[in-house]
Length: 534
Length: 97
Image (cartoon, rainbow over all chains, first blue to last red; front, side, top):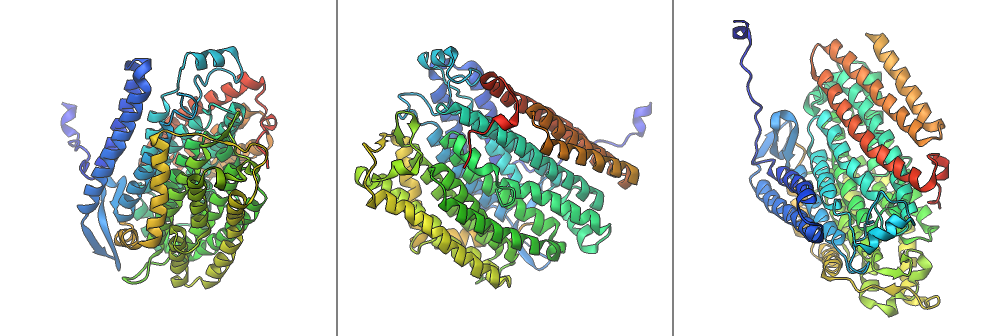
């Protein structure tokens, strides 16, 4: 018998309880696909929304449980919590699990916006039948028959799954697959807007072509890293990098190519050109999800790759990140002044925020008990940025005219008189983006600047403070426009939303104030997360 | 061994240049696929060099991802074509500053 010579095959060792939040989201997404096939059309939207929201709520509960059960690890002079799981594919550690929590909360808020149907007269913000050409008879027929694309909920769940895996991937192959799992559904969701469908389709095409282009660069970087180290695991690459076993050219090329792919996803200059177009063209709830979720997942993945795998080559990449941070802050802040569209303005603001986040990253500070580390400061900044971004885009969905959302800034004049609650909340988010004290944005900026300062990058901090002053100019300009300018003509209509959007706006506004006044608990959570486990 | 890596780099560069200079969305997309396959060649060559199977397994994953990308990409390109009767990327210019 020839089979006798073969060694026994051992099954993989999977820690199901540790990765359960990921499994719950997978189950919700797969269940959503089944619902699409089995539930009658009239009830499908409600069932889909319920499956997605319940899945996320269950995953949030489980993530909190996983976080509390993480064991502390000591070694190599770093303190961290958690462990490498699933045969080295995932690293369930402090920063990773905190990121899961952030992503799930962002997804929950976005799913509530997806489910809003009162604004379009009982239909969702997504087109009835994406296959019909805009303005065609088929489109009118689909609208009349009240057909809706309920697939957005499973698609968004799959994107959320990709984000969660992306932020905790411990080998580069898992990271690449997660990158695609998060990107592919987002490409499709960008093209599904009910109004202004030409813009929406164009946004999907641009996002797809540029996104595919950038992920190939990431993948080639992965291949070169494998060529350098002989393994995809971040820990083994780190060993090869610190002992400098292979050729330096291979290593530097690999770092550069992977940086292109990751910096594209966080929309850092010079890889930012897709951001304004895609943010403007995509349906606004999707923009909110994408702006908060993708940036969070991609930034944590960026930190993980550079701090864990390329931690031994810090002096090779830090100067480049320094320059990119300055250019990103500068361009994001300056160009947003020239914008006349609210969604484009928020897109450039998101580019500027990528720059501020990179300041914290460039500090590469490990942290002590009383000084915040780069990882913790970035986690805190991502929290406040994501919450304020979702809140701001939720308000954008409500300011409407006959053609859908009135996104031109001139249409926002005099909003303060028409609706003090909406204008006040939007002003609050703008102040938080600008980093004014007593809002969460101030604490976020303080955290990243403090990490960069501790890392010895004080010139970068000085530039960062100057740039936040420039950025504050256009945020304040919007506030002046809303409260102290007379409306043009009749002004836009303020749609009355259902309880879903109201909840999102109220929750994000409350969180923005709370994190500004009492940042302690969230800062503790971010600092307690510790470093990446390798 | 170096020859395979060089070839893969040449293919990758051809693909990258193609993405930047070609104007038809489908041709641009084909150039991205060329870059993916150049990566596969590099992965398999490095796998041989290191004497482990990780790179070959990765190449399979890349093939599956590329197939999934084709599905999504062609869906988007076809929906644009139905509206505008063209797949030239220059025409897709409604979103501007």
